[in-house]
Image (cartoon, rainbow, N blue to C red; front, side, top):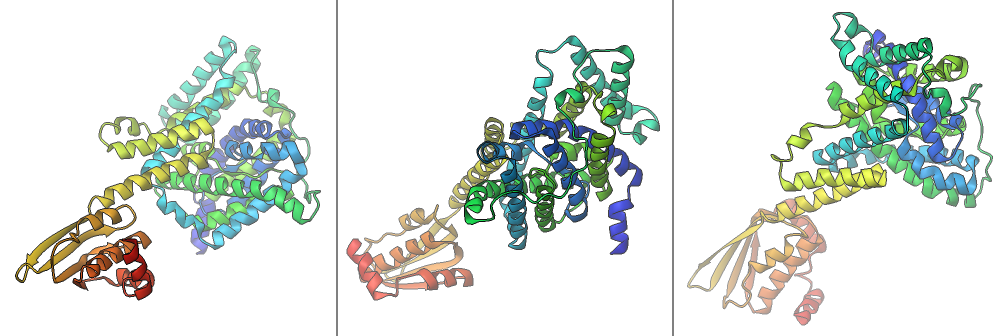
Length: 496
């Protein structure tokens, strides 16, 4: 255990430190931008990113994943800040953390098993598009210098790793930032910088209890916001965790991540920040820059605060073009380009789920809506597909007075009506055998269809023998079936 923990923290020392520095630089404009979206001062997003990253480094379930203030969460805070003020936002952030910890204890992370690969692909592609779209304000109505520097930055990012030895030692995004900053300063190029994004904080964050009334009214105000923040935060964090797992070919602890996100948001709320979650863009930067362990996340948080508070005079001169180039690299690297070529190879249903997820996320800017739409659509396609595999064979015997039905497949809400259509209730018989050894009953709709079949045969004076029920199907039929209840049987007979 000790060696495992040591490896999580110090197994990739150089890579984690350098990647953490790169991530910290990329976090600054994002945190400021998300603060503006939420309608709060830049220091709220910056403090949140610092506290979130440092805390999650210790309590998170996915080493190397970056958590901070995010756009998806910021969008949910706008009305709360407008109507009730900043202190209520701090209180909502704390309650968000409490809800996420409770979600961890009741193992809500298991719901991720319902998210299909096509939904994950749509989620990734949508995020890549949103990341690119977020850079467009920095690329519109600007001078040619911006385009030239952005292009040079992209060239450095993609070509520097090709250099022998040194190309694999220093992260190319860091080289991009240093080179473009030096060039703009020495050449006196007039270009938008980090300092133009907003006033940076000059003091360390301090512990602060939100100044809100501790009563039921306050709880009722912040609970809807906290509930939405908790859901979106966990969803984005667990999806990002899955993506980083695939990128690094490692596994993570989803339950610990749920609780860790909760603990981090509680800390954030008490240190003057807004609720956050995992960031796929910065997580991809971290991984691509060589970050793998918890140290990279810790360095990102600490270096962010050091730069903002103590090195702001240097930080302010970093050209936004350098950071835009990095985020474009993230967008390109995040997008699943194979999904485009796979449109010709994959089934229409798979493509529909992926494209629906992308469109909903891009047009609503809400990751939860997109994933929910994708999961629902995937579930409908799955139910329709499985329902088609249900069929019934029948054979007439014993002087044409006995018919044996053999049911195959899954009987549930989508196939229950089809199940009933296979039976001929008007046939003159003395006995019917229903063999269910090849079938499985899943829900109340299936049980109701089974009841109707048995009772309709009995209505015609036909003896019914049911054989082959598996244990699970027998249990649900015994619990909810009514074919042996005279009162309920009479109701069904009267209805028909």
